[in-house]
Amino acid sequence: GKERTLAMIKPDGVSGNYTDEIKRIIVEAGFDIFKEMLTQLDKETASAFYEEHSSRSFFPHLVTYMTSGPVFVMVLDKRNAVSDWRALIGPTDAQKAKISHPHSIRALCGKDSQRNCAHGSDSTSSAEREIKFFFKDVNSGDIASQH
Ligand code: CMP
Image 1: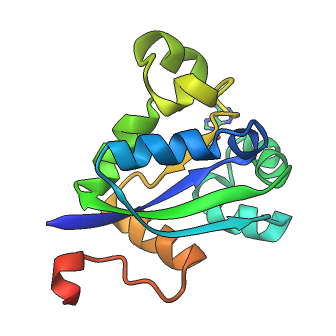
Image 2 (image 1 turned 90 degrees about the vertical axis):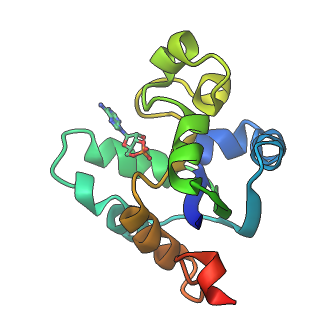
């Protein structure tokens, strides 16, 4: 059935003025943008969002990067939203994306394995957690079941 996923345009994507272009790509790919919000993450919020990466060597840099400017957060609705949004953003390393997935969003606006301009939930359970993290009032489950 239909799914929801959490999509985020990271600080480099927002400051690079990619928000409108990325939203156009999202709509053309058949997603509905159910919720959207521009927000500035603080250190505590960014750390909590990326909790699963807290033991990684890149974690302090990730938090600095993610708090360097506003992010644009969206809830996307579509059949297979989780995997289809991941496919659309491309590989984590934007440098590699430019070669292997030249039409991906990370190829469009990312720089490297950290500054990759976009985020997508990696599973339906991550999507549920991440949607609740930003949008407390949203039901992350199968939309068809909510009617
Ligand atoms: P994201 O898909 O949002 O999930 C975790 C983030 O950590 C990732 O995108 C990158 O921004 C960052 N990240 C992942 N791997 C590395 C790495 N090897 N070096 C630096 N940053 C990384």
